[in-house]
Length: 356
DNA sequence: AACCCGGGGGA
DNA sequence: TCCCCAGGGTT
Figure 1 (cartoon, rainbow, N blue to C red):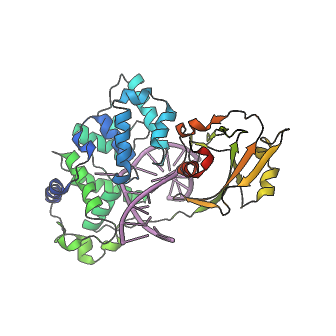
Figure 2 (figure 1 turned 90 degrees about the horizontal axis):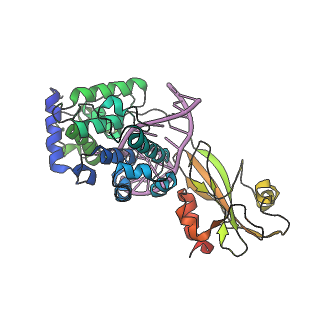
Figure 3 (figure 1 turned 45 degrees about the vertical axis):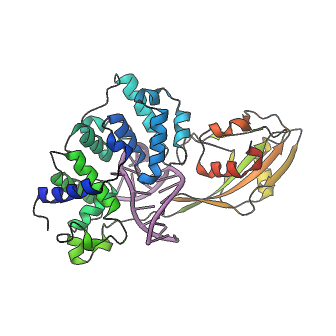
């Protein structure tokens, strides 16, 4: 077992200094860059978030640049990264700091926690990395490392588990270099103490890891509940104007998936439907008019199943060629300026009339 | 406490 | 297929 706090911390930090990746935000101490990277990496692998981080700091070198951008442009750059409320909250908070707080970034855990989109993890990360405040981070990596090294079987997503792991991490943190400690635990979890088949024999904690001693590495951390997948049926009306120079996009305003992103006019049904059902819907008839729809044809015969972590979207794209004047036409040449879900982006890139 | 929110990658 | 990812917000 680990004898004391400095024992765990020292072993860990030695490993970290020898094995850490050279990531761009590790060369920064400006809170804006650390904040940006932490928001982007929430529930997101470094490999996936990295190109977005580089794109953002290039487009928005300062927090004021971000604050002065339009939400639509921020969402466009965020497109494909998922969890779009992160982008909306990021933009909201950039404006809050720039315009209401005299461009002064909060510099304590407590104040950071008040920012929209900043929870316990992110506030701890920024406070420790930027301001040397000894506040321990607890993310998926920390849960895994601590549950194994200390043999803790309390479910990580129970209220008692959250407190137990936070308290333990707080006991273990190196008060002299909290930012290094926090990043070290996470890096160790991400690169060595991995979910599946970690190399326990050569681990720096091999002689004191409780899970290794009891052979329970593969069972830790314990996690309860599994969300069940919900199936939905989407029918998109891909409107094509007479000369095929314009289409129609609508913004998703209500709460739910893809809030604030754009999509084609949507008909959601309880089950898969055919052409006759679509033709009866008011949403379709709105593009019918006196001059008549010239064509209604199905782009994909079998539904495209777009899989989110908690929903499967069975999707049909219905191409509607109409002679009607479109209410708010979107020129095809501008379609790529709109932030859209990956499901829509994939269709756009495959649908020949939308290619230049 | 339970549920919602994306998309991608690894085994 | 299933799991998980440098989590946070809402109800």
